[in-house]
Amino acid sequence: MDLNQHSKLLVQQVRENWELLGYETRNKYQFLDEAQNPIGYAAEQQKGFLGFMMRQFLGHWRTFDLHFFDQGRNEYMIAKHPFCFLFQRLEVQDINGQKIGSLQQRFSLITKKFDVLDAHGNVIMEMRSPIWKPWTYPFYSRGQEVACVLKKFSGLFSEIFTDRDNFAIDLKSQALTIDEKKIILATSVFIDLVYFEKKAN
Image 1 (cartoon, helix red, strand yellow):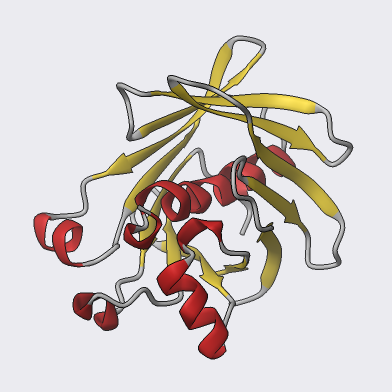
Image 2 (cartoon, rainbow, N blue to C red):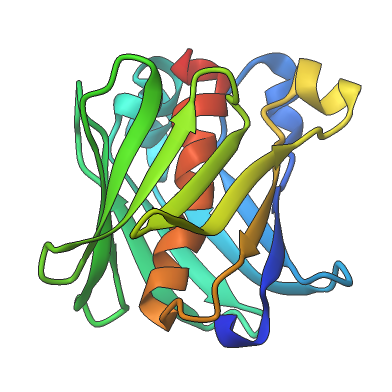
């Protein structure tokens, strides 16, 4: 998926029927362009009984891997979430295991505060979400907003009975590199798993 061709994306969680019965299933997402054409996918890969039990009882504290695919089902990126009880972390790499960057939570009392790091561990952006804007996740570079992830209302039925969530990604700055865009894309899914997955509450 060539992120340089898109400045605005919709991230749509794929609803699973088992969620209607209160079970947390493997999370799957599709990415749409501005015309709502599918351009890619992401899927949580933890399978089997152990993965099922971890989703039911550990919520976002569990370890998980998210695999990202283009429209042709070709895998191009993996996001790994290690076990973190206090400060959440997401590590993004290509399919050859080369590090692209990471997202690291920092201590904050009134905001959701994360640093975006490059492959060498340097801070290249910050994500700050004020407590009074729980559905808005802007990214800043040198004090300027360069991108934003916004949770969108998914419909009353979806919000009440399932974990289905929709997010809009606005890549505002033309100066963003392809690696930075990939980290932001992975972050949009990470936000759903950490803050909006019902079993994580």
